[in-house]
Every structure is written in C-alpha cells, then in structure tokens.
Image 1 (cartoon, rainbow, N blue to C red):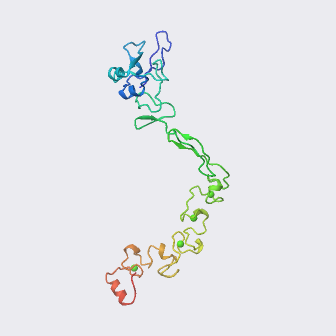
Image 2 (cartoon, helix red, strand yellow):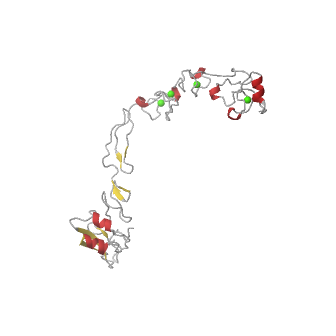
Image 3 (spheres, protein in one colour):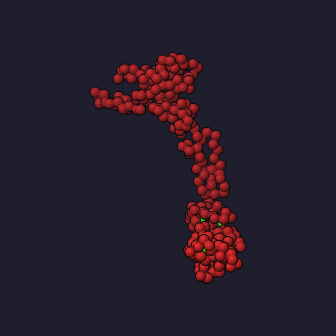
Length: 263
Ligand SMILES: [Ca+2]
Ligand SMILES: [Ca+2]
Ligand SMILES: [Ca+2]
Ligand SMILES: [Ca+2]
C-alpha cells in the first residue's frame, strides 16, 4: 500500500509518495534480487522524516534479518532512494505492495512478460500482424482490405462478399455463408425446392405428400416434427407414421394386421 504523507509545516510537499507501509520482504525476494551475494534494501525506521535507510546486506542478512521485518522492502532500480514508485522486473516474485513493472503481469506468483517470445505474423490476407497485447499475450491482427458490404469482414475473407453478414454463419461448412448460399444444407437440392432447406436430406423423403391432411405444409420427414400429422410428436408417437391421435396401445398390432406399419 502506498502512503501519502502530509504537508510540512511550511506547506511544501515533503514527499508525495513513499514506499510501502506494509510491505513484507520475503526470502524469495532476497534471493531474486541478490547481486553478488548482497541485496539492496529499504529498511524502515521510526523516523517520520526519514522513514527508510538504504542498506546493502548479505543474502543471509536479508533472509534472516530483514525478511518479514515490518515495512522493509527491496530497493529496485526504479526506486534507488527508497522514495517509492518502484516496480518489480520480469521473473521477480509478485509482491502485493510493489507492482510488476510496465508491460508485465502477475502469473503464478511471478512478474511475467506474456509477450516474451511471441512473434506476431499476418494471419491471412485479411489480417495484419499487429502487436502483442501485454495483458493477454495475443497479437492484435487488425483486419485490412476492401469490405464491400461493410460487415467488418474484408472481401477476401468474407463468405458472402456482397451480403452484409457479420456473423459469417455457414451451416453446411462449404465456405459459402448462409446469407448467400443457394443450398444451405449442402444436400444438393436448392433451397427453394428443398422440403427441408436447412436439414441435409438428399432423398427428400416425404411420407405424406405436400398439401395432404397429414402434411399441409409439405415438410420433408427429416424436418417434420409430426410426420403423420396426428398431433403427437414423432418422438413419443407409438406409430409415428400413421395417424392415430388416440395413441391406443393396440394400434400398432391393429395397423400391422391391416398391412400398415408404424415405422
Ligand atoms: Ca459479407
Ligand atoms: Ca454454406
Ligand atoms: Ca434439405
Ligand atoms: Ca401416429
């Protein structure tokens, strides 16, 4: 936690920000910041005027004498005078009172550069390389190129280049977007002649002809939830292909006797 000090008697800001008031220097930090066996530390004092003294201690002195000492903390490169405002570099243990340096994020207890080793490259002819986002480690890959229909997808990558279809949905996965696909389900039957335009049914099977009492809408069996039109959905109809709204349990045997088949 950073502490703001008040003004001096003269009204001048003695110090805007000083280092942590509750930092807990740890052995892990002593080890990480060890340079040739010593660690530079901001050692807390009772003095309000000079709350910290800079000390260079041995690694063992840091671990045994200063780790967990109230308010002591590591003097980082950005805070050589113990006035606060420092930050921890890549690889340092995460400290709740001292932030990781710019462009670093805390990951698994370590200040981490998510963009380290990330090389941004163009995804395709519609997406430039862009830059790596330090908070996600991902490249921005901005789009580029003409966008005739204004749907945000450049023509070269738009599955309907002249139809506004920002969702790019493509039910049959043939590379032609639903918004402009003459055969949505890819069953070889054009939408306008397909009795199930969005269900793959090349056989176009239709037990009851279009316009019949059982099938007034002319739906193909593949997309007709009640093929025999008896009001009982196929899934729970004891004779899904024969009109028997009463669902008499004797129906299947009776229909069989009459030469009809339930399925
Ligand atoms: Ca489009
Ligand atoms: Ca398609
Ligand atoms: Ca179909
Ligand atoms: Ca039935």
